[in-house]
Length: 405
Ligand code: NAD
Image (cartoon, rainbow, N blue to C red; front, side):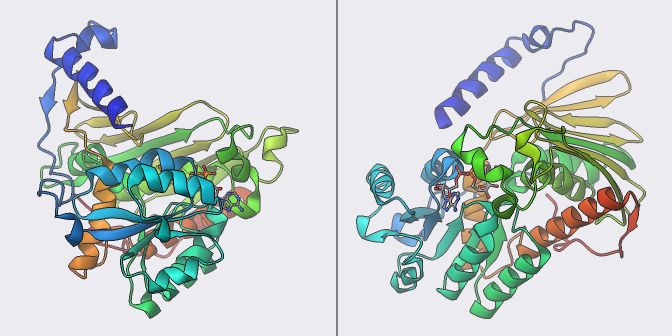
């Protein structure tokens, strides 16, 4: 992955440095000015030197699927405060292969039955749950009860009750629980937050957000098989990728919605959408008056875009929530310019954020309550779509007021 990142950056950097960015965009009338943004730095400890291995917290990855093996595990190499020390998998041979690749002691390989015995392993401080959504609650709760801090992938779980049980289990165990909302640690998204509601309020008063996330779900791929099974996925495109539109509307405004409406549609007779939905469009109204139009789809090809409209200007992040190669455009008057920001490994940033929160005994920026709020809103969106009614919500503060740059 990192090679691809380097290649992408090199190409874009070259285009920008040679002024070919304009040509690459294929529109001579667009005024193109590469500008280094004043956006705040990514969360510490990215600029700090790496700790010596014995001072890093030890992490176990639970579930060795596509995302864990292609994004998460390679990213430990860039972590400053965290190291991979254990693996949990139902496939011993696969786990041994990865243990060799990452220098994990084979004695630190667990399976789903003996997972609890991780309690007796002082090398493991944190378990990172990268299993299908329907298994997040069980493995988070078992991990917390085994005395470990927990990072859990999005969506947090498949129901509000499961999310609450996870929060309660971590609290009772005196352990941290963080939901892996990587976009909230990613520098381009932090820059967008800063533009939207940082001290300089570059876009003026915020008016609207449009956030779109779509991809084609392909059950021929192993990682998509469980995604069309309601019990394991919890829903269709909405909890899987529409959650990025939803979470972005919340972190861009820094507010919680007070009104929700939604429409849902799945292609009739498409065997992929018997149990889970294909498309959901939803609208959110925030207390400040910002309206968000969000889309979520398993039917259109790769889309990850966030647009923010203010009285003084607009921004567009596209791709907004990819693994790398994000692009940010700001338009004021008739001038549209690209802002180039140092790309950083968002997975390493979020992993180190939890390690740092543990060492400093602080609540992480995206705690269990952040995941719970998205699941609560996802259920409300389904309800609004089912009934065709607008649903009013009690005003509430974001789980973390400091959910900001
Ligand atoms: P995947 O299918 O590739 O991985 C799931 C792993 O769980 C596999 O190793 C599989 O063997 C294992 N597993 C154990 N019991 C299983 C069961 N009963 N059914 C199916 N698999 C079982 O899926 P993935 O794409 O790696 O997704 C895993 C998690 O990571 C999901 O929660 C997903 O939402 C999340 N994810 C997050 C991002 C992100 O950008 N943050 C990206 C992709 C996936």
